[in-house]
Figure: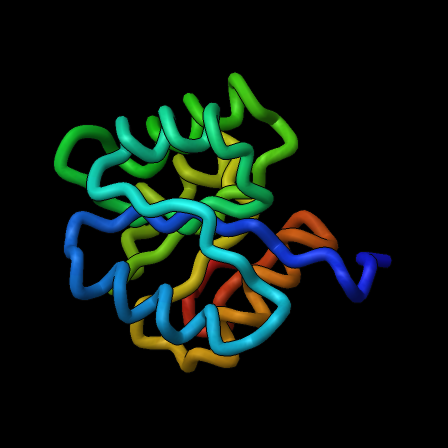
Length: 138
């Protein structure tokens, strides 16, 4: 059971500034989530995860420098307690499977509702896993 007063510390990794700003704006409306950092590349996310120690990393499935699975593997190798929630617009089952094998805690589509994103962040933080209902991942 998570404490009601503890804010979930989140790091956002996506190459598009507008996307990161939009997610940040949507998530900061509630008192439950605190955005502690942003990264445009997986390399930046790995460095920031080491420095900032977020509870959850929202990791794009495909980044300019590394794949989602490789970035997830590197983050989890150094900080196994950090949860990685994969964000994607496509249901690439091969890449998603590799993300889960690398230690990802969940997956959510970029076209899901904001409430689902909040639920996904909460679920991976509290329970260690989440799966988008439309992901096709069993």
